[in-house]
Length: 114
Image (cartoon, rainbow, N blue to C red; front, side, top):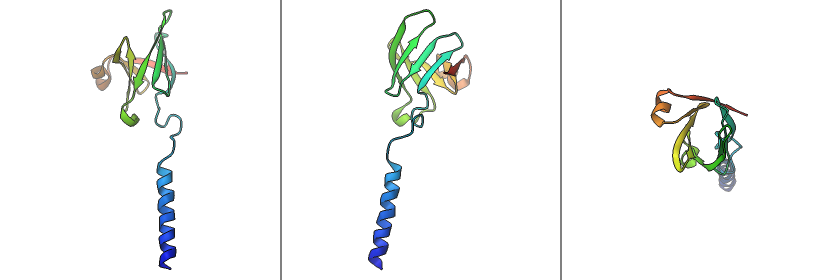
């Protein structure tokens, strides 16, 4: 009886550990992934591989990187532009130029995902 209980316990433990691992669903760890446009008609694409492209209205496309922190834990993303990895801040469907503006909810640029 003790052997059966031990086997049952380890089976349940193994099943629990397997459910904790595995790949995340799309968007679960990459909630910022996608293409959006700001209120000025500029288009931003954030890819799952953490690369980005920005196409300013009527201008050339810029390729860079974006980040939402280690293990995708930050509630906002930073988007690189012109070599600055923290040029834009993206949070709650708004784009900000400065972190302090984002934290205080001012000077926000409305965006819409496509």
